[in-house]
Length: 182
Image (cartoon, rainbow, N blue to C red):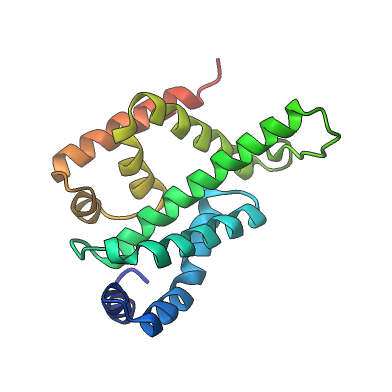
């Protein structure tokens, strides 16, 4: 989907208020958005929830897409942010349920899957990074989770490539330390 001219054209038309183009765009990007959410969130249901949130954000905010970068890059940003917000919401709900002392069966994915646990650890590390250095989170997410190339990320974030690489380096160092035991 990254270099798909038809998707880019649908996005351009949707920005102008073309409802049919927006409907076609949402249908076209839906599988891609779900795959990206599933790369970030370990549980399929959580990924589906984040996907729906991302598609809703695209529909609501399509007019904010200015075309400075490809639509697919803008979509990666929206999707990654929605997946991370879904994770925050799930953590908050779990904490509220635990505090209410209701009998809630909460499965800890860290005990059931190494991959799921690693993703949750990474999301926790990104939350800690965002608390201290929020400007480092988007570059790291776009590069390492969304796998976008440096020039495209730099255009999207409106920063020089050198600054981007520096931020990614610092973010990886922080996350690496955060993921080390003890």
